[in-house]
Length: 297
Image (cartoon, rainbow, N blue to C red; front, side):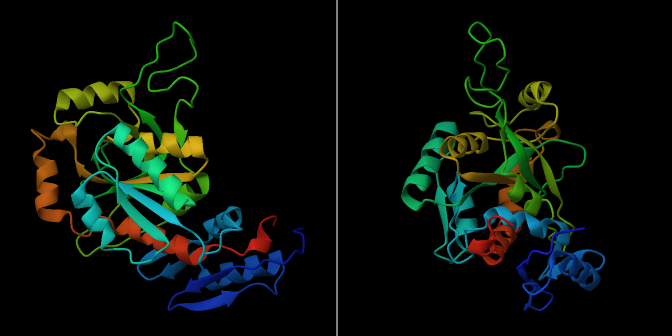
């Protein structure tokens, strides 16, 4: 039998009215929520949200929605323009770091020093990999690694390819953020965008040939996306103990492309509205954190 402690969970359902479960014990609150929202989905605007992950915000207790600060880091001016027009809140800061790992790490550290965000998001474009991956789909990081780092085995024979000595072999995304991200669904007028959780690998190489992509996938066959910044930002967040996740819009499929023509077509034709998932995720965070006194519940 579940303990009869009080739960306070406020969230918006359908047209935005709020339900407060503060007067219900755990059993009653769970029953009421499941009865109301069968089949276990709430509808928030265009986004369906699975009830099962509402509880993940227990670990955000102590960060109220009106106090949460979110930093978003992109590499290029055209990504910056796309995202800046989506956010007007002072709680959200979007900055350009520049292309590549060093710029990404410096940009993340600057963001942390100056803005002190509770969450950092790496956003932008990436090359995709996998039979189920389509252009304009979004890969959300489960883990991140470097595809161009090798520290050898002469000093430490436990270090693997892609690992910086003394750091994890892969930098994990924050599990609560990942749970939320993988339960967002964003219908569009042309097709159903898919959100793919998976490994993102990073290196100082713009992948414009099938040969280079095959080389990377040979070492990381499960990788869903390849970019030039995300793992470096994750590395910086790991050292600073800041929650992190990456959303990468697939702009091209290097194993099916020639001379980056897909990448250029993406920016010329369909880049508008490509950052809806990042926008929806951030708006959800800003409206959904719990109160301070629920931290131990």
